[in-house]
Every structure is written in C-alpha cells, then in structure tokens.
Length: 602
Ligand code: GCB
Image 1 (cartoon, rainbow, N blue to C red):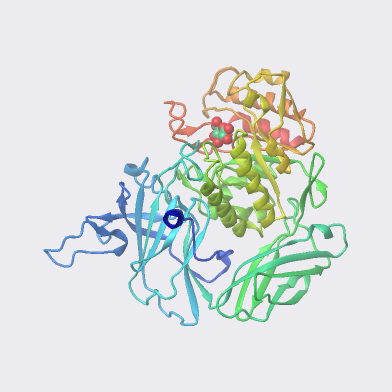
Image 2 (image 1 turned 120 degrees about the vertical axis):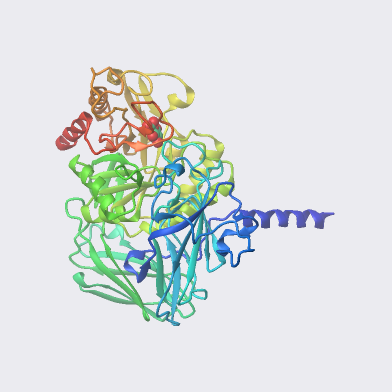
C-alpha cells in the first residue's frame, strides 16, 4: 500500500513539474551587444481563442498546408494575416482589442553561412504571458512571465533554407499567475519585445555581473568585483577583464565548477551619478568568446532615514511610469519610446522613476544609464496574488532571476520593489520575506522596498496620524507608501490634518499619490476630473508629504495617462486611467507644473 502512496506522490510531483513551467534553456544577458539577426517585422498569425494548440486535430506548430485538393488542414499560415513583432496584438487589430487567449505567430527565414563552430539561440525580449516556442516543428519549451527575456537553443535544428519559428503566446489571466487576474493596466498580449537569432561561440560567456565593491567607496583606489558565467563544453583556463579607459587589463583563472569570480583595484574611477552618468566600456573575454558592455559604477545604501548614492544623501525626485507608448497605444519597445518618456520626466525635474508595476523594456533601463536617471524596478506582485501557493513563489523567484540577470550591470537601477499594496498575513509575510532573502542572496548592489499599507487601512481605525507597522518593513531597506487621500476618500484639504509615523527608522518614499483629470476639462478645485482638482490635490499632497520626517523621495502616480480596462467612464476615462500629469496625446495638465516647481525648488 505504502508503495502505491509513494508512487502516487511521485506522479503528482512529476505532473506538477510538467504543468508548472516558466523555463528557458539558458539565460543570455546583454543581447544587444552580441552577434544577432533581428527577427522583428511582420509575422503571420493564427488565433486560438479556445487555447487548444491544434486546429482540426493538427498541432498548429507543425506548420501544415494542404498538399492536394482532397487534403484537410484547418489552418494556414501561408494565407494568414500578419501582426507586427514586437507589439501588442490587441492594439494592432480592432477585432483583437479585448482578446485574451493564444495567438500563434510564425516567422519563416533563411540563414546563409551557418557556421558549424557556432551555436544559435532564439531570444525573446518579452512575450505576455505564457509562451510556447517551437522551431522547425520541434517544441523547444514554455516560458512563463510576461515581461522578462528568455532564450532557447536551436543549433541542431537550424537550416540554410525555409526555417519556421512558431511561437504561441497565451495572454489569458489566471489566479496563480504573476500578476493575478485583476490589474489596473491593459493586458497587452503577444510578443511585445524584440526577437533575435543569436550566434555564439561553442563555449561562451552567457552572463556576467560587474559592480563597484561598496567597501572600497571611501578608498582612493576603488575595487571592482564581479562574476562570469560560461556555457559550453570547454571552459578555458583564463578570463580577461579590460576597461581601456581606466587602463585595466586583468586576468583570472577560470573556476571549472561554478561562475568565475574576480576582483581588482582601479585608480581614478569616476563614479556614475545623475549629474555625471559616466559609463565605461568593459570587455570580458575567455578563449574565443568575448562580450562588451557600457557600465557605470556607483554604490547605493541607506543610513538611518537617508538614501546614500556614492555615500552622499540623495532626494529621489521621481514619478511613476507604465511601459506604454500612449501615441501608439502599445507596449513601449523602442529606444524612441523610451526617449519620449524619459525626456518628459527630465522636463518635470526628475532624477528618479518608478517603473510600475512590472519589468519595463531593457532599452529604457539602458537609456536611463546614459541619461543619469535612477530607477525603481518591480515585479507585478500586485493585487490578488496567491501567497499560500509555493509554485507562485517559485515563479516570482524565477522572474526575479531573469530581471536581475538582465539588469544587474545597469547603474541606474537602484531599487528592487517586491510588492505593491499587499495586506499582511501569515502566507503573504512568509512569501515576501522569503523573496526578499532570495533577492539579497543574488544581488547586494541594490536596495529592497515594497509599497506597504498603513495600519489604519488594515485595522480600519481612521486617525489623523497614519502609522506603518507592517511586519514586512523589517525586511526592507526603504519604506514605501501609497497614499490617495483627497482622491480615494476625503477632499484634498484633509491632508492638512494628517501626519505620518513609522515604527522603524528607515528612509520613506511616497511611492504613489494622485488623482484623475481629463486634460482640457476645467472647473473649480472641487470639480472632479478637472485639471484644477488635480492641481489642488498636488498642492495639498506635496505640503502634507513634505512634513514627513525622513522623506527620501517620491514618485507620484503617474507621468502619462495609461490604458486600463477598469476605467470606463464615458467622455472622461474611455478606457484610460486619467491620473497622468500628461494626457495620452502628450499634453501637459496643470498639476505637471506644480510638481515641476516643487522639484525645481527641492
Ligand atoms: C494604486 C495602484 C495603481 C493604480 C492606482 C490608481 O494604488 O498601485 O496600480 O493604478 O492606485 O489609479 O488607482
């Protein structure tokens, strides 16, 4: 009997691991600086609203076409319409606006000069949410998570002619996903970021971390440390790290077991900071494999209520942002898209942006490195997460792994935020403290925060003093608070009666406040949706938050109006969350100038 129970448990575990997938073959970072062929452009597509993976009994990824007049195949990519990749499928075709299900995409291509001494990978920048990648009729794997990159190897499958890459993307929402079923943003489905065909050496550096060693900040000669990850049959004996501008040329013995770590000292290092976002070209090589990247070196830490950048207190003049180009009504996916919003943020006087509520495109993070804008990054651990579900915790870790691997070398990224507005409870506390420990074990070069709720919101006692004693705070470097007084409950003037305290002495960021206004709609300061209401709310809120002891920064909600199916008020919202300081057409509202003035004087 016992044997059967064991067998049953084994089967259960196996079936779980088969269904529970968020995998990829190998994490490859820094793809923009590697050798690749761009696979963006028009892809044919077949809709699969019932998520069967097959049409008329045939798997869609087999890429069949009827071969004669008696033949029956119930789909055809050859005669299909096309979608542009990268891009949200919802906003490219009116009939797909609210479609949530599977779209099968096909790209065919030839590849001249395949080199037998190289390896080839399909790299997807992001596809929302669950993605099955197939190549020339073979399933490579399934990836879960809508905002982080993944790669699959196709070395043995690639041909010189008529390759077909078929990718099925399922944008359906589920309670055990991250995010869960309800979000206040549009569920842009499909292949939303670039697709690349990467070419690498047989053994190559698939990932590397490099950063300034915090403990050397006060020394004249600073220490740079890092690690290098290899993949392939022949790990070479030595790696070399070069930073030509600093005259650094160092070699290290390769660790044959795990990643190779290195550390060396440098003279005359200019630290990266918003006023001088200095980037150095770094080259790492081993055997015939080499990578290069432009990297800034800085430290970030806290001291009491202060946030210290390179050892000096910094006030984070920030703004929240969704990863959308409002003009194209699409997920942002180009450097121009990033340029548009970063320029607006800089015009507002910002040195900091909260990338809400999921990982934004890598191009924006790289541009922030160049422009000297500090960033907060987060995963969509948002409303309705299944905290008691250990698989969800594993998914969160895996998505964080992908994000850390992608952005570890970006100086601009200074905060990992692990959750937004979640209520304390045993499962939630365990989940998030476990995740905080996990992230710290992977990355000690950033701070950890979360937007926490005030005690009154949890216990329901209205009070003039807002207190914050969420047990999660113990695990955080920064206490972040979202406070919508004046919009969700009360009029803006009520702000004058409020004050804030926290049990622990840590820096505080106001990570959200704001209210909606339809650009061009005017009224008095108490007329909801008018620019004047929003303007008044900003004046009152700024006066209130300015009094917080230990205020280290703020990111009002939000830079630009963004698409949200939760917002359906006709003639006002029309599917847009109107809390932007800038409309979806790019026009600034009055509150923009209130915040700008506050930041200019700060
Ligand atoms: C919040 C959420 C954000 C919403 C915002 C709002 O607290 O964090 O995702 O969009 O409020 O507009 O209500």
